[in-house]
Image 1: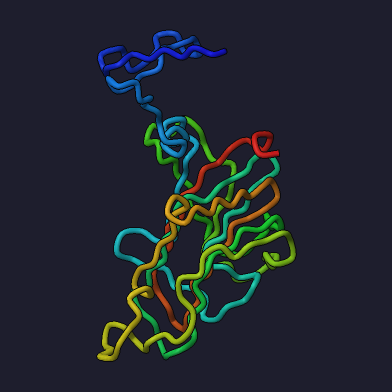
Image 2: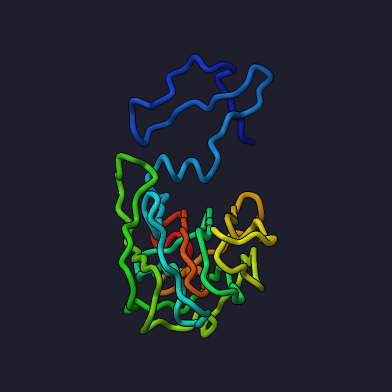
Length: 227
């Protein structure tokens, strides 16, 4: 049988001097193990990435109406990678005339590497950037996309659907607060989509003359780790 012993304090060195060598585990004084969260471990490793569709105070102008092959943020997963979304946020700054809004995210095995839109930069959440992402991110896709529903897919987040107020900045009527800012967290929902090589993550935020921001954080792993 196994016999695991821990250092019952925080006094032992926090970093092993022998990278890859054995190191004693740490615990509280009553023997409770101190372990890193799996997501935090991936961030320290440099395998957690983020992408924004706009910068500073300048929003993007999203697609006016929903079309399956035209998401407002599209992350394509190439053959050597796999991703797991961790966090998504969508916020509208304004809309034009009142119209139905479609805001949701879908994970799919049917990706498309050739889409038309604005190329976005994917950055490591480890500011030292020890690893670069192999994925590509495109905002406001307008052509050449593959409908995500053509593969094995799941619409795992839909915070808002239905009527959108006309011109938030000048509207005196009631506005659903989720339109101004809605977010999804894998840790809160307990839903962990795994998107394999060749798949994609598609996020929609369509609205007539709608402007706003989309943020997405995901863990990227070698494809061999999820097969």
